[in-house]
Image (cartoon, rainbow, N blue to C red; front, top):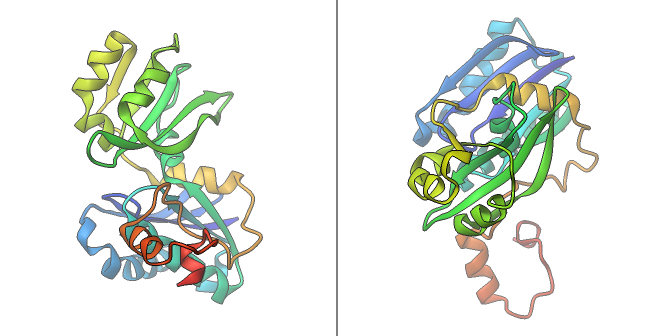
Length: 239
């Protein structure tokens, strides 16, 4: 299977072309402010380097979020456009799971954290189980202290990674002590996105596919205030 993998949910812009799990070509651009202008040229560059024509792609894999609201929207929009125009499969992958999958050879808990400001985080809790990544706590937007309170009840080593782990490492280690292991060098990788995208089922309703924000955007909060009697929960469709 030929997969095109896309991730602009955080600082790196990741685009990769893979034959099953084998990466044929990839790019990793850390200029977050340029994702909107660099994504399409990166896709063109990577597919040409792999020797593909657009119709050669079997499946588009996209990091669906959470993460940067703008970044997630960019990747999801482009991935939907490609899947629709080329009539190809689309798979959405949790951005937190994609980061967690970079941690191998451990039986402890893996906790990817994205900083959501004011000691709030986007977080998930995962564990490796026979070469598979298993979710132990659903991805969520939460106060870091609430998450740490939950983790204090666990007895295993806990591996933290991501911007939230780096920015709040003092609070994490003060709460969990030596049980907490901060992994500062682990960054999103195309190989993990490809692996997860290869193993997941494709989207059945392409029109309904949307970013995973996990909390309201500023635009949604403003819209909700302006429409207090609306019964709809899908801001994107209403707009």
